[in-house]
Amino acid sequence: MEHALEFFFDYGSPFSYLADARLEDVAKRTGATIVHRPMLLGAVLKATGNASPMAVAAKGAYMAIELQRWARRYGVPFRANPFAFTSNTLPLMRGAVASQELGVFDAYHRAVFPAVWGSPVDLGTADVFRDLLQRSTIDVDALLRTIGRQETKDRLRRNTDEAVERGVFGAPTFFVGGEMFWGNDRLDWVEEALRRGKKET
Image 1 (cartoon, rainbow, N blue to C red):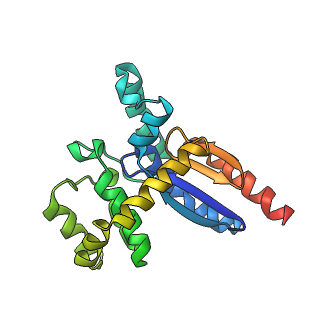
Image 2: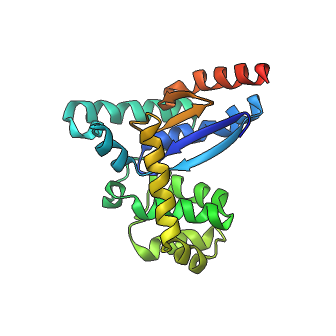
């Protein structure tokens, strides 16, 4: 897609949440189209021999401070999520793919990220997840049926495999053309690449 900003993300990644809060402004300033690419971060970490910062106590403690700093800078609400589902976001990521297939991704995405990292609720509980979707005016039954389809599962797997093949090792990761950027703190460089690409077209 011409002048696209690809965004590989996982709802379990707090830095993806922070980056997501800035993407629309970046797109407006550059005229870019955001292409959301749901992937399974755990599978990416495993395939690349990487590990969560939380696996190292000192790094995890520092990351908690950094998250609060970035949230204040961006002016977005942020709270650490205390619920166990964040270590297995497979249902949420399949939900992202399913919502894309049904044409309701914007509503799904706007509901899920804040419910994970803004004002956390236990999305690992079926009733809580269903209630969130209903309040977002999403057809819950249609979404759940689509989540369970093999095509949805395969598409998420393909997204994840493609991410690894293209050099992704963590989240958030962005692509502008063939250029890769990792981390919410690289968005200024992402914007520069988008402006440069726009001049060249």
